[in-house]
Image (tube, rainbow, N blue to C red):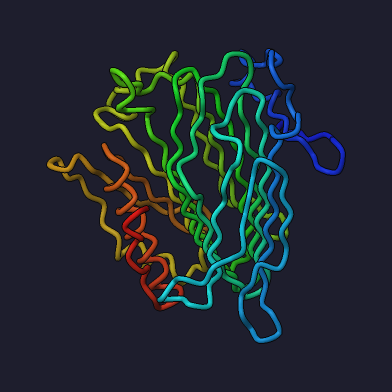
Length: 318
């Protein structure tokens, strides 16, 4: 693959997706602040490990505006030793020319929960695109739950992301993304009026063995998004990747039923990832609340199998 490409800018690399074929129409330089300008180049590195007493802690933290992370919290009553971290942004929605780089590392037997403080909004873009490159690395026996709030693309937005999951065979990562079709209740509605969403996730072992790759490109200008087999009558799409030791895969799969609920207009399905890497779970719905609930219920099944504990109830304000 020719992308993502990076190049040096001061002490942190700026992500460059310009060689991705689907982004070729959106390479005009921003007329306002340039790509990589201060405040448009978010960088976040989080490193979790066990301290001398065997407690999981956030040992390593490095960030660049607009990304913000505060001190880890320990509020999960089912796993009180798990640090919980929320990613915040001081810069408002993503705009054209924004670039983000996130690196999450969990060392041996560490565990963590990562989320975002609010939905990620992708603003209208005129000249360029917004891109994010993520690397998530789990060492032996590590456990990570990544459940960010939904991503909301506004009209004429362009967004591309690449997520690399480097996971030891004995570790478990629960990685979820929720994409809304747009600002559903903005004016007369703004569903599927974005220009393009390009989302890629791929898993591998620490020795470089490639396990799977999933990429979907949503371009409403080229595809009929409401066709059967794409979104049809649904407005929200959730994508969940679970990489876990082989002995956990079948019990989780057996405990998770695919379903379609026409009354709630909610559907979900599950399948195996290649190379015994784990499971792929997808949810379709109309509103964020029910979709998030199904994702959390699935996460609870994963945690029950791996840690012997369920997810606690979600905070009522989330």
